[in-house]
Amino acid sequence: MTETAGPDRVRSAEQIGLSAREAAAAPVPDAAPAPGAAKNDPPRDAASWAKKVERLEVDPRDGVRGTNVAGRRLTGPVQGFGKMWQKSYRMKAGSQISPEAAIATWKEHFPEFWPKGSRFAGALTGINPGDVALLDLSIGGGVKLSTGVFVLYADAESFTLMTPQGHMFAGWITFSAEREDPGTGGETIVQVLVLMRANDPLYEMGMPVMHRKEDKFWVATLTALGHRLGLADPKVEAKTTCVDTKRQWRHASNIWHNSGVRSVLQTVTGPLARTRRPDKGPAKT
Amino acid sequence: MSAPAITMDVRRIGDEVAVVDIKGEVTAACEPVLMSAYEAASDGKTTRLVLNFAGLEYMNSGGIGMLVTLLVRANRQRQQLSAFGLSAHYREIFELTRLDEAIAIYDSEEAALDGTGGSR
Image (cartoon, rainbow over the protein chains, first blue to last red):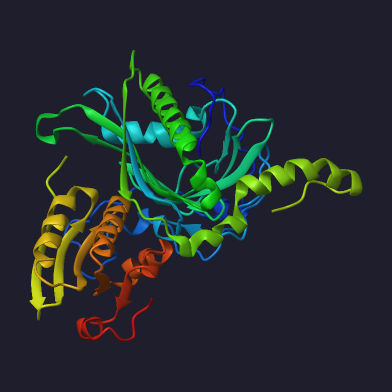
């Protein structure tokens, strides 16, 4: 989910082609506790979490290659290979914007804040638990790294994306907003919090570069959000902390799923495959 | 940041095992409470830390992230982390996030203390 391009905002996202599964799913309302709810009622976070999935299912979407996602398992920091990092990016959004309004804007226009050169093809209904978004990330040399993200959690004040096997990172990215001092109606703080490990040894070797790209990517994204929220001069604070210095060598075999390597191969072999199958459309994922 | 709506009480079962009874809401805001419970539970020769989620009322993704950082701290001290008392809903969240691959889940406190029949 990194990108070297600057903070230019794309005009609109290619988020066409809602999957049947997503179309069938009604938008999830933000959970609120019912007055006098009984103890054995579903917990009030029930609607905010995605249902359990073993492997991801996706339908092709226009505007992205859509490979390296279907059939993949989700990976959290426990399944990653490299050192564990927590990266936070915070922006003050003023006291006039409520946390709920900031998150609603973010969810609704999420792909538009993506820096130029990369594409986020999500569901047309926005960002709801269980959605799978397909990503094409520019990695230079005309190659796009194709991967995806899964919407693990979403409520009125936050949402979290989880990565699949083969993504650069194994982990979660949480987007949230909250009042700095709720009692006095303080400023709304908007934050991106990344908790992740590099997914495999190859990605781990590239981490020094990926940290810089990641910082640039999320600063650009938050700056774009700040402009959309009406801030004249958005300022983003970035902080990186190493949570665990140990590498998990038992997960070194994650390299088999490496979406970077596979994307390069798919870029090289794509035209050849189309030449051999002239009467067939693009491969379905 | 709002005050966490949670309590975490530590019970020691012998020298090596500590049970943390969690009641309320597990969110990122309760990190100080969890870490102070962890410090209390890690006092001495603790090798096993058992989380009791029977009183869990609410958990968001920030709460799951906090459990991962707790797991890292426990692993650093060579302590095993396990859990019991999870409702079907929260058990499914542990499975969805694949946290159950690192934190063994048991059906009861007895099973967790015995260390038998866990999900891991």
